[in-house]
Image (cartoon, rainbow, N blue to C red):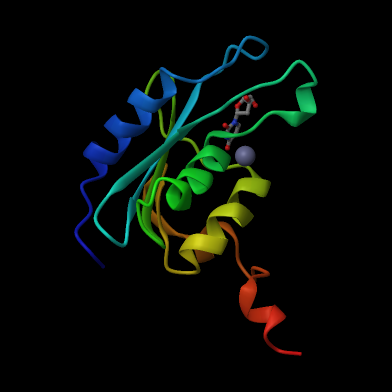
Length: 132
Ligand SMILES: O=c1ccn([C@H]2C[C@H](O)[C@@H](CO)O2)c(=O)[nH]1
Ligand SMILES: [Zn+2]
């Protein structure tokens, strides 16, 4: 397992959370990930008056990965609330992260490091589209 500076990732996530747009829930979330090129990519949640259109912090993160040329793959991921407490991604975001991290993506868990397989077992992914 690569040596991950989880404190640095959590700090980057917390910093990103200060730029969340959360007038409705007032619940800022920040996410940060180490990429395959050694960069840190971050994201924060962006809400909408049509509540269901809200973008989670992880959604912003995976968008920025490619558009800001910060890498191709995610290696390690951390997500925090405004108090800096570690959060786990919602179901939709687990799927979004799986696309760019696969089974081995390391996740900052509540009781230590997890992998994507721990939080999204038997995932559907790009490999299934190649089987037919
Ligand atoms: O994994 C998660 C879970 C929730 N939120 C956001 C969405 C919404 O703005 C707020 C409350 O659900 O938290 C995220 O950004 N990521
Ligand atoms: Zn989500």
